[in-house]
Length: 291
Length: 307
Image 1 (cartoon, chains in turn orange, purple):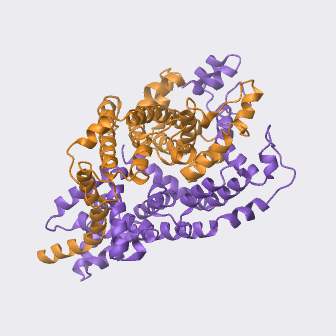
Image 2 (image 1 turned 90 degrees about the vertical axis):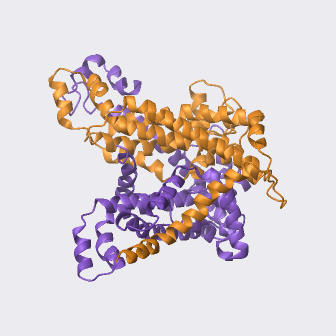
Image 3 (image 1 turned 135 degrees about the vertical axis):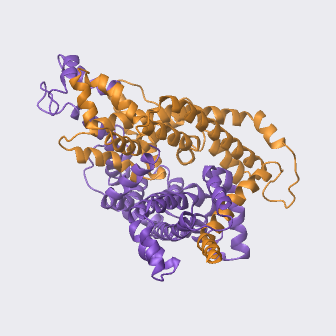
C-alpha cells in the first residue's frame, strides 16, 4: 500500500515538476553560473571570469542610471497607484446610482494589455498632435515634448502605468473594504467620531493587510518594468527611461552578452529581495491582522 | 487623501457637512445627490478617456488625426482604417495564435497543477518535502533571472527534440508555462481545506486515486480551478517579453507582439494604429465583461490571500 502511494505521488507530480524544473529550477542555477562566465551567446567557449561581470556592473554608468530610473519610477508608481486605488475604492464602496458603471470603468483597465495601453498613451501624449497638449493649450500651458523629453518621459510612463494598474488596486481595496464590519464604523460614529477620523482610525488600519499586499506586489512589478519602456521610448531619449530590465534585455538579446546580462539579472533579484524584505519588516509594524 | 475631502470643500460649509455625514448617510443634505459622484464622475472620465479617444481616432481620416487642435468629432466614420490595418498585418492570425496559446496554457495548467497539487496535498511519497521546497524556491525568482537559459533550452529543444516547441513556434510559448509552481501551490492549499471523508469512502469503495481526484475532488474545487484559469488566462494573453524573445516570424506572433511589431512599422499612421489596437483589445474586453464576476473574484482572492 505504502509503495503504491510512493508510485502514485511521483506519477502525479512528474509532468508538472519536469516542466518547472526544466524551465524554472535549472535556469536559476544556469544563469547563476553564467553570471561568472564570459558568454557572448555566439562563440562556443565560455571561460570563467570570476566576479568580473559583477565588478563591471558596479562601474557601468548605464547601470547606475538604470537603477536611479527604476527606483524613481517605483517610488512614484507604487504610492500613486495605491492612492488612486484607495480613493476610488472608498468612493465606490457604497450603493449609489451608476455604481456598477463606475466600477466597470475602473475594472476595464485590467483587461487592456501593456502594449495596447502604451500605444494609446503614446498617441494621447504625442508632442505634435496629442490631445493632452491640446488640453494643456486650453489652460495656457505651453506645448510639451513628453516622451521625447529626457526630463518628462519617465513621468509619462508613470502616468500610463498608474492608469493601467488602477483597476487592479481598486479590486484589491474594494474586496478589503467589504471585509470591514459595518458595526465597527457605526460604533465609532455613535461615539462621536467624524467620518475622517473613523476612516483614519478604523478603516485604514483594517485595510493595512491589503495595503501591504499591494505595496509588495506593485513594487515587484515596478522593479520589472519593461513592456511600456520597450514600446514607447526604447529606453530613450538619452537613456532617460532606461530601467534595469530594459537594459538587461538589450544586453541579453541585442548585444548577446549573456554573462553580463545574467549578472544584471541576479543584481535585480537581489534588489527585489532586499526591498521586499524591508517592506515586510516595516509593514509588520503598521499592519493589523484581525484574527 | 486630498481628493477624499474635495467634495466637502466645494460646498459652502464643507467641513461641517462632512462631519455630519454619518447622520445623513445616504445623501448629503447640501446636495441633491451623493457627494461621492463628485469624485467618481471626473475619475471615470479620466479612466475611460483613453478608450474613447482610441475609438474616435480609429475612425478618423489620416488628415483629421494629423490636425492640431485635434478633431474631436470626425465628419465621417472611416471604417476603411480597419480594413487597411487588416491588410497590412494579419490581426486575425495574431488573435488565433493568442487564443491557441492561452487556451492550451490554461488547460495544461489546470491538468498538471491539479495532479501535482493533489499529490502534494494528500500523498506521502519519498522526496515530497524536498521537491515541494524546490518548487517554492522557483516561485520567488523573477522571470528575468531565468529567461536567458530558458531561451537557450527552448532553442536546443527545437533543434534536437521537437521543432514545434522551438524558436518561432507556438509550442515555445506554451511549453515553458504549461505548469507553474504558483498553480501547484495554489491548488494544493485549496485541496488541503477539503474534508477527507469523501475521498476515503470512495477509496474504500474501490475507486483508484485518479478517479477520486477527477470524480470527487475536482468538482469540489471548481472555484479554485476557475480562479487559476482566469489568472493564467490573463497572464498568458498579455505576455509580451517571452514571445518577444522567442518569436521573430509574423505568422507565429501573438496579439501583444504582433501589435508592437505593427506599431514599429507604422509608428506615425495613427488611424491605422488605433484601428489595429481596437481590434487587438476588443476580444479580451469582451471576454472580461462576459466573465467579469470570475475575473474580479480571482484578482481579489490574490489580495485576500495575504490577509
